[in-house]
Image (cartoon, rainbow, N blue to C red; front, side):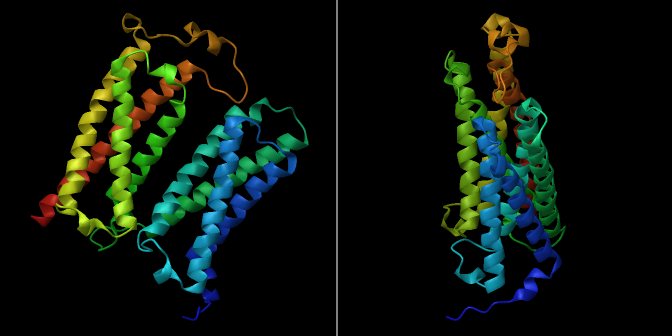
Length: 300
């Protein structure tokens, strides 16, 4: 089959917005690469984020330009908005992590100026991706793909927050000292897998393969996730910050935190971050449950 190139797609508002995404991520990683300012895990993460978003955005533009949506291996009704929200969250995290854990420790000079420029363009990219999500998400009363609805977008947020939690849990000492903390890690993993399966079913348009209706599946997943996260939001802070259960109530009691190392986060900070992110995901799952339950009631 012949490929028809339609350059008009680049002159449309959405096409121009994607060009902005492409340019801003390109400038971000180019500034950092030019001076080698990405040492350490946080710098590497930011560099990966900008390069990854640049490559996938280029693919999205190329598919739209060549009109190859039907040949794309994933559902084009679901993929662009799913990716746009992930990219917005990726760039948001890099725009926060990179300056706070890397740039502020750099001495004044050319490298620091390039790093600040990269952070600025990362913020621009985040706004551009968030704008695409706002433009393309489903409106009230509009028939659209699941990933363009509020529950679909919440699934993206839930999986992303879970990935950040896993990053903070990279040190097994944070949870292996007690079975209750290991249960919290199991909660994060199980809920992440269920949300990821939901996203993959929609991207592959395989929801009809489920033995039950998709709306019932969504409700079951949301209710189960809320119940599991409700236990984690109690157990994690209790065993991490209550001294009666072996926790550390104050940051200063963590000897590693007393000597702040550039490009790293101490264990007490990791515990606090996981506690906050657990609360964020619980709120996301609660909203997801409300929307999913409403969807089942409407279809009854």
